[in-house]
Amino acid sequence: MFFRAEDYTLYLHALREAANNNQCQVHAYVLMTNHVHLLVTPERKRSLPLMMQAMGITDPLLTPHPLYLGLDIDPAARQNAYRRLFRDTISEAQLTRLRDSTNACTLIGNDRFKDQIATMLGRAVPTGRRGRPKTSA
Image 1 (cartoon, rainbow, N blue to C red):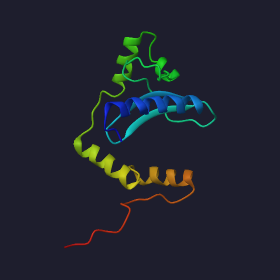
Image 2 (image 1 turned 120 degrees about the horizontal axis):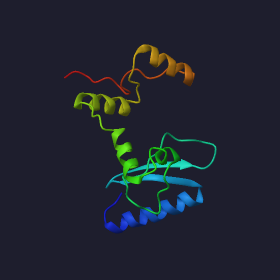
Image 3 (image 1 turned 180 degrees about the vertical axis):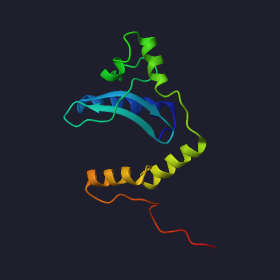
Image 4 (image 1 turned 90 degrees about the horizontal axis):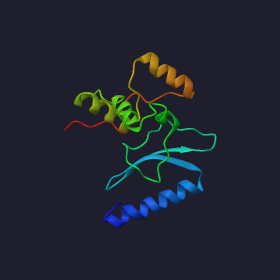
């Protein structure tokens, strides 16, 4: 996706234009060599999950989310409060389980939780890996 420094600049220019044209606020972004992460709030009725401000970096593309601003009035204290939200780490095994579940589009939780999600969606939810089962050698 990004091969030269100019590619990043061009992408950010296009992102800024798209955000303005579609009445969206960009709260944070991460540009990787082969993909991007965006945290965006549309100004229309649809809503997205809680957004954040990038780690204290000033960028005219970013609009601080009201919930982020509500963490503290002082910018440094606000950044520290935000970082504290994510201070705890998870084990490598937990991280692997989360990644596997995400990649397989399955839920992590007890049967009651899975039943609640199925009821909310009005359909069955996947309980295992998608695709054909592996064959033994």
